[in-house]
Image (tube, rainbow, N blue to C red; front, top):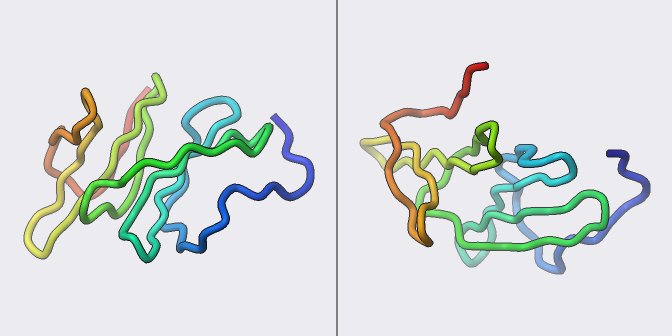
Length: 102
């Protein structure tokens, strides 16, 4: 996939905390904004975007081979990896980063 030119994704302003490829032409960004945090899935071929709420305390992202998005969430004492399942975020493992092997 090649990206040519600039594409507007959203009208709001936010701080991008992390970005991961989730497909051949799709990236997911963890965005911190005035409303809290969101995950924005962007098709880089056409600029279309879908936003959803990020879990509270979201710090970083990871993606497995099937394109499932994992989020590291942290509070003052714990750090956990979560994955969305059936509309809710579920704990997957304790940890501070997401990594997948071959």
